[in-house]
Length: 70
Image (tube, rainbow, N blue to C red; front, side, top):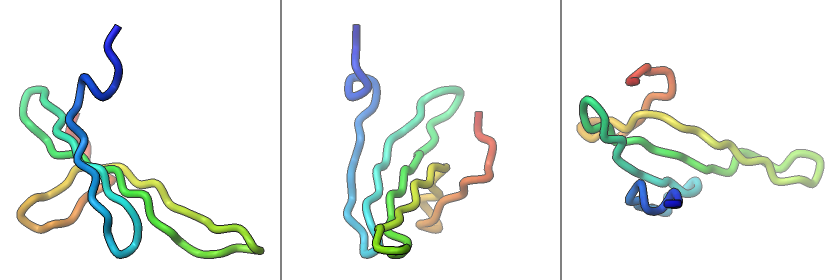
């Protein structure tokens, strides 16, 4: 049985607002995916974070979470 780390090379990167994880989804074409974990605010004494997932656009340096890449 293989684990997740055997399937994808994950590249973490610390950013000003949180932490990004990059990996390549290799199917019909290679698609760079990103998981972004970022601080949002403190709400009633509890830190709130956002977890986002999407396709990373290398040229623009941004990502889209509404694109369907299959």
